[in-house]
Length: 562
Image (cartoon, rainbow, N blue to C red; front, side, top):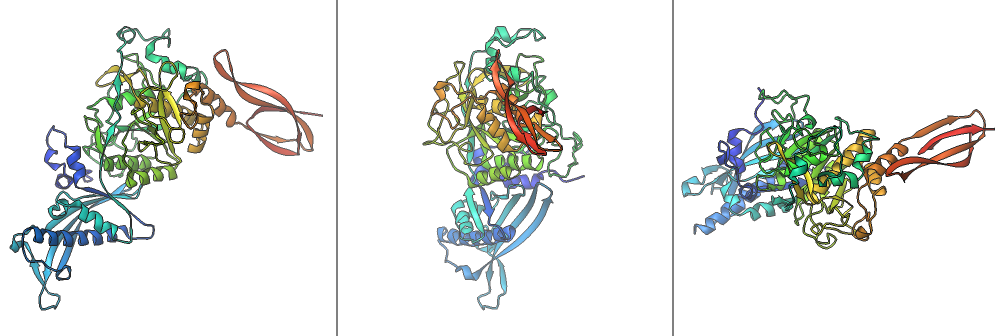
């Protein structure tokens, strides 16, 4: 049997072990307190750099401890830091090692002889560090909870890494949060309606499906199960009747056998993984992640909740606790997992005002493999050009930053905006969606607008494989531009799924012509135009002088004459 994701012994070293066998959730503040995030320059030996920096930190911390205890100082030259490494795991997603450091004292005779540890002087000289290196994003997470001499002053470790020439960044782990959401009217009369073929979208439950043209887009295309959206959030109620059919299934993992069948380092990760509690169950104790997942892909079964996609694969990537708080390091690990599992995109309705070099690097690595990162702009009602919220405000090519509009197609009063920082808007007020364990609820926030964009992006990717750049071009180029959004967003627009689907159809068409000799071609250039509340291709005729063979892109058809 393969080893578990984190052994119980190692869990003790991550400031969460005391809760490992308890129903009580570990404190996120306690988890991040003794964690460092590090990155290293190209061409450097990251492991050697880590050992060097930690040895330096341990010696410095030991010297500082002697001073605090009023004992005679020892020069760093007289101290030696012994390192013992215990290899834990090496798999496709990460490597994990336990490193134990002991401070020893050189012989005063100068012959290099070690006189043993300094524990007899009353000092705690032992330091244990867990290093989790996330291969796909190039970030190392160091847990120093069992290194008391350094954990008491984490700035010593930060300085030691900063002094090493191989370090590209080092930072303290930090807490990020859900953006606050606002609960709206429950619409009980609509929620109790029978769901059937006659169900229409003329109720407040689904106004956003009409406004965005998602209901009309369904007549052109359906989403497909092959498109995978990772919901990085509070978890997902995988057994919810309206979500169950659209939960991602890891086909290479056998459920419940306690074995890491696909050797990615995560045991029984059938529907995703819980990076907060380090377990396969992605149970949602908050409800936010389930609500987000439903906007992407709920199929009305026991409630009236309906998502953008009738078919899609939603993976639950939990890193937030039941209060909506999480460690940046766990969010980075979720991104690392999404890259490892080759997901098409992640949906991210969380953040904060602080910049993280580790998180930024992880998103850049996701961009490098063409993975879309959809992010909520935030609910402070601020201009994000001046008061940015991250990760939405990072300037990385794969990010789509999302604002929220209300039922009147105006910018929601709580939504952040920004002519240079926020890309596009989607409905985010009174959005009715799934909620654990098997119900539905109306919530408002950019958290709700974000999965609308994720769902429409999944619909585009269901037509054919597309680069992130093409998905963004289609979303931004077809956005509807109400006056209320002018100069508020980069696109000045709100998503229009029907128009985007129509343009995607045209953009994907290429015709090859072989004429045998030069001819005159009457070509009909197709454009998407709104007719009778539907976006459809409309042809316009023009003449083209053709060579013997040519390729015409975005033309629906053509005939040869004379």
